[in-house]
Figure 1: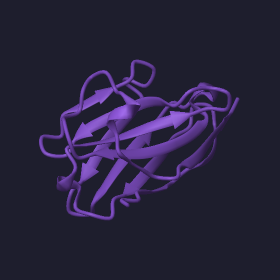
Figure 2 (figure 1 turned 90 degrees about the vertical axis):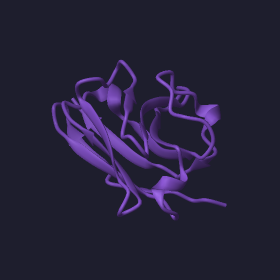
Figure 3 (figure 1 turned 180 degrees about the vertical axis):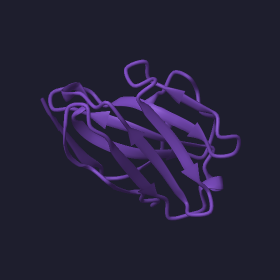
Figure 4 (figure 1 turned 30 degrees about the horizontal axis):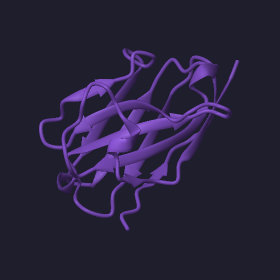
Length: 126
């Protein structure tokens, strides 16, 4: 069972920044697509951003475009999510995920990702 491990969550004030990191147990090139998802209390899990491990092509949910940046470091088997201008609406548990079949798509679908981490909590105070 592939287990991804997230880190970097914490508490920040609105307008602040955080960078999340996710380490994959295998080389990231083994996965076609890596992504970040989030789930707030009482809400469904939603896709935030995804990145092709090969080309680096990225897709973002509209709610985070211009504020969040996803990146990968294939040498370190990591995928990062740099989050800026955070708002209370960004507060959630953030999950890293990977898929080894198929490609990243602009419409991020949870069901297409087979491998998940346990999450890291992000809290944003107003």
